Length: 437
Image (cartoon, rainbow, N blue to C red):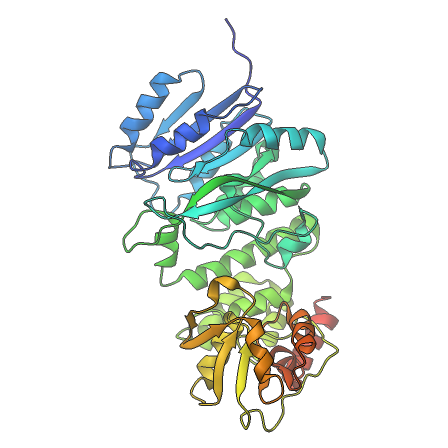
């Protein structure tokens, strides 16, 4: 009897996942879905018994599981494994799962299939997820930049927003069309391919962000570990790799859509490189990645920018200057993120810094960069006698209004103050005049 062709293809890549892969495969096989689906599994020459477990599951599900077992590890180019599997899928829709992650909702595939059937204008949909460690205990993890309307666009991607984890995505099989353009999957970077997948899908249509929690992401970072986090976060050249990766995506987007990643983002990435990377090395990297005159201009903006915070992305109507007596009153810092870290590296030795304030409840009562973090309500008793310095670029306006409502009298914004410097004004002029930002 001839079996129906699969409507959905689930891709799984494993490497030394013997401890977790049974849970991964069980979470796929438990799916209650009304259309036929196939599971394509590629193992990258595991040495811990993963392949034996995969053979066991394939014997029990011969009509559903197709198995590809490498005898030799792909080494420094694992993103080619993703490309390899895409060449062999037959479904109209595709889903992803790494060998140590797992799905938690038995209706995940059916729910996402129904959504794409009802919304032909979107290219894919993602859901929310939880993060767990190797023992299954919850751990904190960035879970994506979910938009208020639940629609993630190519413009969000150009601003480096993060759509979510690939273990939750369900997409139309656009990646099965053509061959040459799909090679960007492994040409952009040898290891990272999830962001490239999102970019390719967004070139076809928006991605819907659904509120359901359907999966668990295994967050592990151990010295010598084989998982992605352990590899990339232990790489001493990780920042350089990431910068090169985004410049290659920018080049691809410009060729395909006429517009690339926002130049401010690319310039900011130069500042994120390790301090030990010389100016000459950065310029050589710029020449490698950026063609012709545009490379000169972006490098010029990099030189003009006042520092790591890259305050050239937005204008704010409220006060932009810092007072001469900033350090003569007690100073409270609002914001415990990256901008706060930069500020404290420069000025943390001042005794007048009393504490940090942040809207993230998870940080309250803890210390960040050696300073105690408190709730915004703590500003009440300091509203007339302390200077409050906002250290948040993305939500500066909202925080300014929030602090104003408390009745604070001395509110200042470091991002906007830096933004108003002559070097920033010149950098912004170059971006707007010549790079058409």
